[in-house]
Length: 388
Image (cartoon, rainbow, N blue to C red; front, side, top):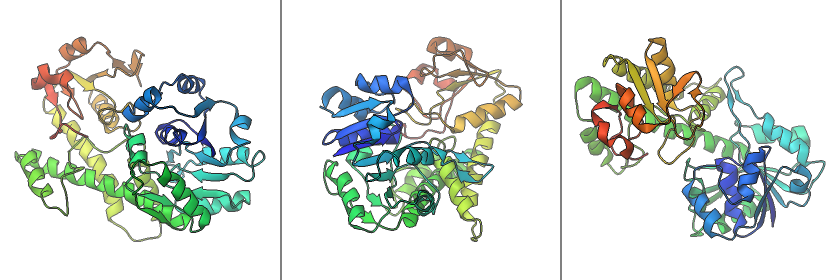
């Protein structure tokens, strides 16, 4: 097959590499640097499996800025462009998807267009009507940052938003590209598939919020979070996973997906969805108060990233904590080696680890790292297990 993937972020690049092992794949992006890196077999994102695939696999993958070249001969076109949440409209900004579809259709009316971007419930049917085409299919992604290709190779499930032979073919296309060929596949209507994506991520956000509130309780009462989390998690119905306290959920998906799901509840009774979002705000406020009790002159921020092994810090919880500390006139210095500039949103960046460690009175670390082993007395973290 000739497959074009639009967008080279976590979702797009992992899909491109996934299929380039068996098919001819074209990655389309508007960023010249990303296109150049991919053509040099260098991953523009931090993902161990993608980096390994570039080094070791014989990938049929080329990247381009040329839309005509990318679209004309494609059998499948996968859209993996960003859809940020717009708080003013209470809706995902889906303009990037619509712009891509508008460019595809004059060049190629027969390709199956697969939307991988996260979208509101009901969007696929609306967009098919808007463009008067039946060539659009929604297939949600369930990928972790830093593990995107792994999660494509070993998926928890493959879901396609179309009950048809074409829907089965799309599911089979993804299944054939997996390693074990045993992932459950499920075809359903597009609107239900859209809801699966939002409800899945909101459940994960709820689980993060739950263990964070457990940890807040323990911190307030001088109890061992570690012992209580371990004891709770031994129940097989709860499980010993996704239970490590943090400064709050953030990243590409959870903040925007929870807000979009809440917006979809506009005329539906609910309490829990709203509470998940409020809980995350409360957690960050608690962290700030705990830091202020230490009366630091300079607070060091060890990494803006959400997780170890990731280079993404979009909407990371630590950023809200930094902004609130500034409101209390606390000086902040940030160590983020992935940035080569001297400041981030007017906050000082220090890319010399030793100077950063020596300068900071208190160091906030969402996740512990061996870099911090010699200054543990300065560290403030809620990390119990040393894992994401």
